[in-house]
Image (cartoon, rainbow over all chains, first blue to last red; front, side, top):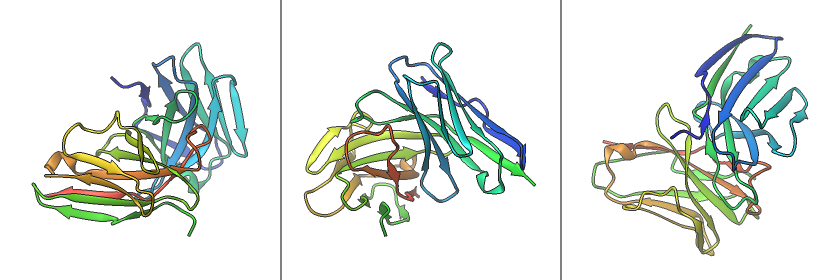
Amino acid sequence: DQQVKQNSPSLSVQEGRISILNCDYTNSMFDYFLWYKKYPAEGPTFLISISSIKDKNEDGRFTVFLNKSAKHLSLHIVPSQPGDSAVYFCAAGTGGGADGLTFGKGTHLIIQP
Amino acid sequence: NAGVMQNPRHLVRRRGQEARLRCSPVKGHSHVYWYRQLPEEGLKFMVYLQKENIIDESGMPKERFSAEFPKEGPSILRIQQVVRGDSAAYFCASSPQGRTNYGYTFGSGTRLTVV
């Protein structure tokens, strides 16, 4: 049973436009969410996180939105740049840390010049 | 280098052999996590360790797999009698404390191939 789902295996966006990556979850116990970026042959790199008490968190070009009622979160990247081409993983965890994260399968973002 | 160091980067083992994967956390980090990524899959949590303690091994297969994080030295993920299904990328992550909501630091992974 997949508790964190990223239904788009890939997404192609033109450089300069907005990239929107989506993630759905089923476990209502999750209370914080993270996005990681991964290049081939490298480990994931933390991008941005959001606690369930918020509905938006922004860091530079990256904004994460959380809709708890819909159990849905999204990552917005604007403007998209060629270096943003990578696989993006959505992850979720329960409060207090000291536990592992549950990851989605990832979305491969391709930024077209 | 302040990052998480994993070695080897690539490891080839024949079926039935043992695989040992090493992880040196970021200096000062006392919490280590191991994840496995199968082809076309997301990362799956395996085990969470602190120095000399296993905190959560709920994601670890019950047989053949073990992990340790000794007082001195790197964390070790050990797979005995490897099978083809163990072929995957194994990632280690570390954090200074047992909270992951700010994101912990991953290493570059060890790619295990069982032939």
